[in-house]
Structures are given as C-alpha cells and as structure tokens.
Image 1 (cartoon, helix red, strand yellow):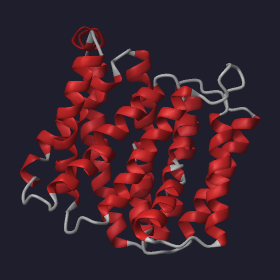
Image 2 (cartoon, rainbow, N blue to C red; image 1 turned 90 degrees about the horizontal axis):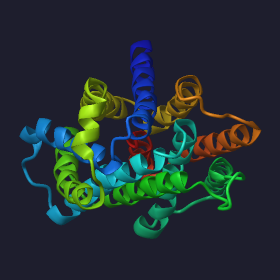
Image 3 (cartoon, rainbow, N blue to C red; image 1 turned 60 degrees about the horizontal axis):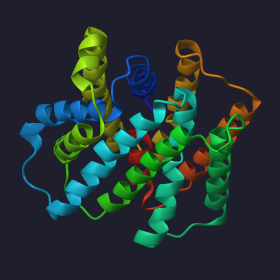
Length: 298
C-alpha cells in the first residue's frame, strides 16, 4: 500500500475513533436523547445525499430494510448503549459484528467455516464477553454493551442482506440509509423521548459541531475515503489495518473520557482483536462485504 493511502486509512480510523468518543460526550455529557441524535444525524445525511437517491434499487423493500438496520437502527442502539458504556469497551464489543456476519453468511449464503476461522470466531466472542462482563453489578453483563452488541448484530444482518442487492453505489447507499432511517427514528424519538429541543438549545454550538462532524465528516467524508480504498486494495489488506480504529478509540477513551482499562479489559481486548484478525485474514467470497461492515459501524 502506498504511504499516502496508509495515511488516509489512519485518518479514517482516527475519525471513526473520535466519533465514538464524541458520541459518548453528546448522549452522556450533553444529555442529548440518543434516538433524537440518531434521527437528526441521518436526516442530515439523507438531505445531503438526496441527489444520489435515484435510480431506485430493486427490490425497494429490501433496500429500505438494509438501510434502516445498517443506519438508523444500528446507530440508535449504539447511541443508547454508549450512554452508559465507555467508548473503549463499546469499540471492542462493536468488533463482534465481523464474526456475527461470518456466522450469518453460513445460514443465509451457504458459506463454509473452516477450523482457523472457527478459532477466530471463538476468540472474538470470548474477548467480547470479557469486555462486557460487569462484576460490579448484580447483572453479569453490561446493559449498555448489550445494546452495542445488538446494534452490531443489526448491521451484520443488513450486510448479508446487502449481498442480494446489486449495483448500488456508495453515495446512493448513503442516501438510502438516510431516507430509510430518518422517518422511523423521528417517530421513535417523538414517542419515547422528551426534552429534545430544550437539551439541544442548552448544549448549544458544541452539539451542532458534534452533529455536523457525525453526519458529514464521519458518514460522508471518512466513508467515501474508506470505500475508495476498499475498491483499490484487496479486502484482506484493508481488514488488518482496521485494527487501528479500536486501538485509537481505547487510547482516546482513556485520555478524554477517563475510561478504566484494567487487566480484564486488556485481556478481553487482546483476545477479541486477535480473533478478528484471524477471521479477516481468512479469505472467502463474503469477506469484502464483511470488511465493509467492520468499518461501517461508527
């Protein structure tokens, strides 16, 4: 890989890591309702990408479902989860999306899993469970991280379903994610949350800046660069470099939000990332799609 492209890959991972920390500050520090935050974010994405909406992908119902699961549905669960979870732990649990996609590919696409990938899946889930373990409460697993895991699973289902939709360009995909996400999220935040406008006004310009960063820099700029690199290089070259994202998130979480990083967290992180690498480096026909998913959940 050319040095310029490696630096672009690092920039993308840095932006994604920063977004995880920024999201924590928005829903926890500023106390912005998570569903409202997700609705506004995807409303901006849908508006900016509106010129790329047509032609309508077929079947349309599948594109709408994929767009919601990979966009508003997955991110809403992520934002709800990170309200109580730390950015570093959420970034590690989010990596479980890759083995979930691999397992779903067996059921939905007839993919075969051999022993090396099986070991990778086992290590990733073991590491994820260690990170999610909450010995300080009566419930053994962190509720916030369970929501993050559900968000990753929603994206995994969407990624496998996306295999059955042909000819959708990256910006068109972003447009349909925005369209399919904003309406259901608007109804959900109106029915389940309160005080959205009041808290947004109280948060002021920092919230506006965080919102624009999430919608424009993360969803459009970083993902456009990432999709370009995916098209230029083999997926099994890009996939290992994505390890930079959770590592940068852990570092930022410790520095910015004071995340605790004890021996249990370190062991779980190491096992999960080793498992992810094993899965990512074993080629198969669904691997490019799984790699796109792995980088998508930001």
